[in-house]
View 1 (tube, helix red, strand yellow):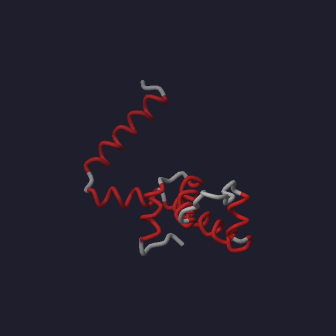
View 2 (cartoon, one colour):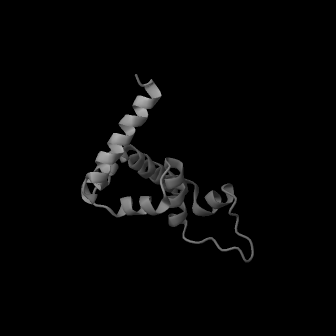
View 3 (cartoon, rainbow, N blue to C red):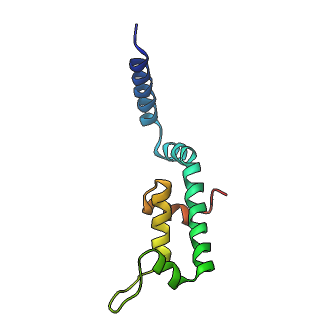
Length: 108
């Protein structure tokens, strides 16, 4: 008789084996469904950060985050920084999050 841990490992192995047999598009769709909540959370965080900047002003927000402009310091595109920040907060890769934002399905 198998222990609980061994049974779980066996089930996970069978599930992974079955998933590997599926076509690429089906696997992608399954992953999107599994990560839907992460995507929603990342989009929500991004919009909150954007509102925070609009409310406080770009310069104050940068100073508060430690990006005070001094001579020679250049702050790049803040929108990309916000996207990266929201992706990190939600546990996504920044590249994956940017793809999500480009999709027609916005996970609203």
